[in-house]
Structures are given as structure tokens and as C-alpha cells.
Amino acid sequence: MTLAVVKLGGSSIFQPELAQWVDALAASDQPLVIVPGGGPFADQVRCAQKQLGFSDRAAHDMAVLAMEQFGYVLLDMCTRFSPARTAKEISRALDCGQIPVWLPSSMVIGRPDIPASWDVTSDSLAAWLAGQLGADALLLVKQTHDFSHDDCFPDLAERGIVDPMLASMLPGDINLYVAGPKDVPETHGHTLPGVRIGIHAFAEQSG
Image (cartoon, rainbow, N blue to C red; front, side, top):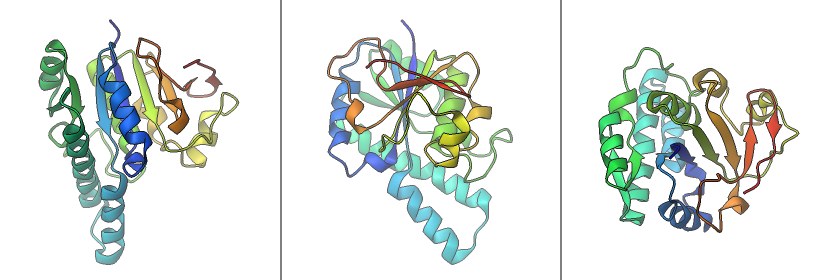
């Protein structure tokens, strides 16, 4: 059965759709790995950097830890979710029929191949993880519907819907999907919701 990495945007944390997404993902019969966004926790890092002037390296590491904070929120919402810090822990959770929630600091902080920049958000880290795991698909869950199959990747990056490093972090053999608040699946199977995209163009995908 194909493996999908699902990045659940931190901007959903105060939205009613969050509980709906958690329920839908928890009921899925497709193997999933959830990557939490940074959301308001990462926003606090941005504010602190502006006030204190610490380096982008420090900010990057703190933003990775912000993803873990949202991860603990998700873990508290569903008993099927399981914390996973390494590829082995992810594999172990999947083998047990659980849904791993990736806590990325152990695998990400200090890696020379991951730039310490605000251009690398949880989008790019989810793409990087998908490559590390050999996943078949990556779904980015956003708190917006400002995208369509007519968009091209540079347009989305320019509008801030995906980060500018995503294209370089996503292996070419992984299918990429973007979904918004209204795309929460009503049925739980092997079809990912939202819009299927390529690096240069989008193709429609029914939910």
C-alpha cells in the first residue's frame, strides 16, 4: 500500500477544520506520516528574531522545535497518532497500524544539506522527509483555497502558498497535492484530496 506524507499546516490550529482533518486522517486506511507545521509557535520565533536579532541558524532550529510544539497538540488529539523522531520510529509506528507524527528536530537540526533559512518551511521539510522515506505522495494541507489547476509552481511560491525551496527539496518521483479547508475528505480510502500538482503546472485531482 502506498505511503503518503501529509503536512498539516500550523495555520489550522485555531480553525474548526483542524478537528475534521484529524478525524479524517485517523480514519484513513492508507499509511500516512503527519508533518506538523509551525503555525503560531513559529510566528513567535519570527517576532523574537526581529526584537533580539539572533541568527537565521538559531531561528531555523527554533522553528523546527515550533513544529514539534504543534506536533504535541496533534498527538493529544488522537490516540492513533504516535510520536516519531527517526525513520526507524516512523517505520515501527506504521508496522503497528499507528499514524506517526514526525517530531523533526533529531533528523533536521544541524544537517548541512538543509539550509537554515525562512525559505525552508515545514513544506520543504515535509518534501525532504518524503524523499527520505521513499513515499509515493506528499499532501500539503493549507488554510487557503487560493490555488487551482491553472496555477504554476512559481505563482504559488510568489503568493506564499508554498515555500520557494519546495521544488528543490521534493524528489521528482513523488506526487504532490495541495488541499484547503473545504477539501477534508468525507470518505477514507487511497485517494488524496485536493489538487494534484507538478513543479511547473497543476492537474486536477478529485477528492
